[in-house]
Amino acid sequence: QVQLVESGGGLVQPGGSLRLSCAASGSGFRLNAMGWYRQAPGKQRELVASITSITVFGGRTTYADSVKGRFTISRDNAGNMVWLQMNSLKPEDTAVYYCNAVPPRFDWGQGTQVTVSS
Image (cartoon, rainbow, N blue to C red):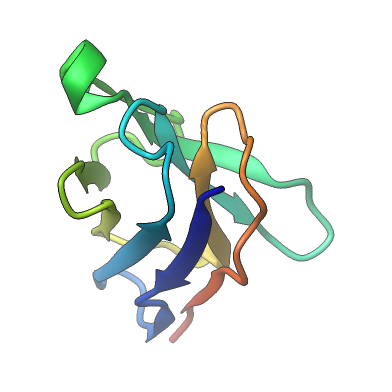
């Protein structure tokens, strides 16, 4: 079973940048599409970015319209890592961010809080 640990969140001003990291331990990571999800207070968790297996599908990426052009997802299959580079952050990006397979199949980690505020 894969265990997921997210990190890298924090408080940032509008227009700023953050880089989130997700470390996966256990087997079954490399062949799964992985994604970054977020959940804002009072809202449902949503998928914001995904990346296919590099081994099987070459690491193709997709993004929600709300983050397209600002966020970049990447992964390192050998190191069991997934990252989310977030640029030009907006207050509406404030949420707890999680990584998981797409669709989700692993236990959720604790997430990492991202707060965008002046």
